[in-house]
Image 1 (cartoon, one colour):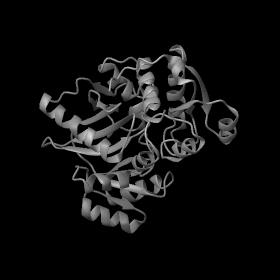
Image 2 (cartoon, rainbow, N blue to C red):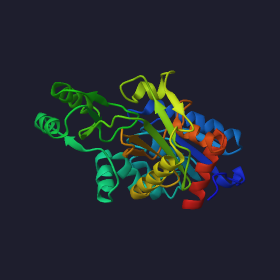
Image 3 (cartoon, rainbow, N blue to C red):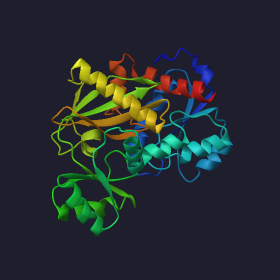
Amino acid sequence: MSLHSTLDPRTFGRVAVLFGGTSAEREVSLKSGNAVLAALQAAGVDAFGIDVGPDFLQRLLAEKIDRAFIVLHGRGGEDGSMQGLLECAGIPYTGSGILASALAMDKLRTKQVWQSLGLPTPRHAALASVADCETAASELGFPLIVKPAHEGSSIGMAKVASLDELIKAWQDASRYDAQVLVEQVIVGPEFTIAMLRGQVLPPIGLGTPHSFYDYDAKYLANDTQYRIPCGLSPEKEAELKELTARACEAVGTQGWARADVMQDADGQFWLLEVNTVPGMTDHSLVPMAAQAAGLDFQQLVLAILADSLEARG
């Protein structure tokens, strides 16, 4: 399938760009949504924005909507609930369906699916008590990464090097999510790889002076490094792209997605997570990867929207 959309912008009808919402990633979603909306309107698409709030159902029923471009990050937009609502309303939408969205939002169950298929992901455990923290410290060792199982944008994440730090990080992460995940730290370079319409875009190598690629490094800092080409040999880059395709296929992603992967000192790749509604801000990674593949931002959003037409009519 071609990455470029050759469809007349009028083909899409009236497009609602859904952004904002009430998740912890609301501010990022507002930036992403406004960028997508501006690009669609500049391309001649009849698009308008909806900041998804308590009145969303009334807006959905009152507005004429031919299809929806979902730019909601986190719970309420990326977890299958919005996808299910749009399915019930008979409104085609961008990105992954209900099951893939819900699965990818749950980092623990995503790992379990990957493990069942023999795909590499760091050793991990679920935390629900101090006793779980003690067991994880004993079985996994340090350092460890703690993260809410259902959040994105590195919200609630922490890197820990002792049991006391682990317990505190679990308590902090619990404020965002009842289910908390802890996993072994993979020491080495980090990569992010975007999928667009069934094709793997050029991988991006990430570098940051922070202890890990946290919220500040993703959206605010000016010292984060993005390497395209990613610095791998052609053979290792091909291996990384194949692994990403298998990881996304296992989850069932559709349209577009982005996987985060670490590489250890032995050259082994380790899958961290998949995002089904990646960021679309000026600091975001999918637009960078698309640009490396020859698509500007407007062409990228049109390609994502075109996939919704071909996949859901």
